[in-house]
Image (cartoon, rainbow, N blue to C red; front, side, top):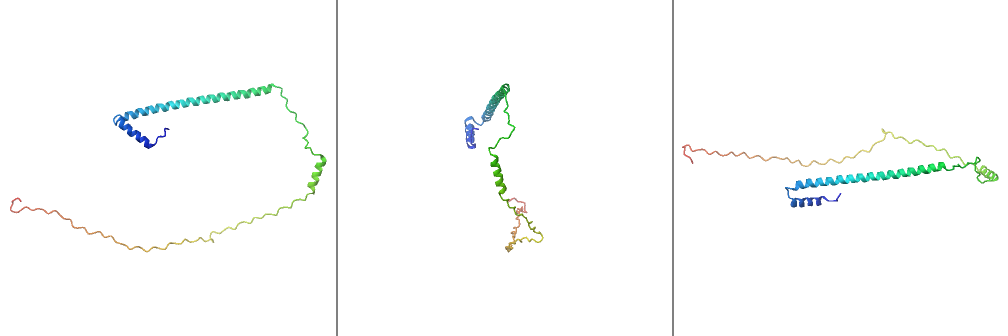
Length: 174
């Protein structure tokens, strides 16, 4: 609609965050959304009214054309209407009988065309699926197995236990 890229929209958002502040930004965004909604509703109402006006204008023009055609038909019916009389005899082609007889004689003197040779279509041989051999696929040579390396876990060192400090037998503290 306004041809704003995402980067430009992010820049506008960052500026709004700095100028308005994070505390009042949600309220400002809500207000902007409501204003945009009102503008869209007004635009759609205007567009609807414009389309209705166009339809009415088209209907008015169509009605005027129909009335004009009806008027011209009624005026044609009221005037003295006399259809054209069609002659009963076919129109002459302008050729004399002598010329027609001469043309017929020339056509009769022409030799008849030779007949076309007979066309014979032989059926195509049908391949038998059992006798037809399919080419065999070549297999790639098997690769030599790589040397198998066994993974041996290193031996775990025995767990060292904490040495207990024994108290002296004579009862004195160290």
